[in-house]
Image (cartoon, rainbow, N blue to C red; front, side, top):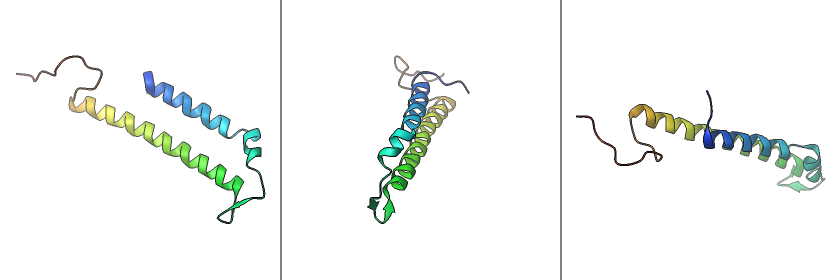
Length: 88
């Protein structure tokens, strides 16, 4: 599937952001002996960022699926110009 427009930008942004958030210098910031609800802060950061990446991936996929469903059912999308005319 070829991604275009915002979908492609969203995918690239998510990839770069997750890549930066999992770099060792950033992980080192949270590598402390501090506990948050008796869980080490580094674990909370790692699994929290991982969960957010999964959530944003799901949101991007859901948005794409909704747009494809609209196209299949014949609904007009926001990029169309003018009123939709019903076939006679």
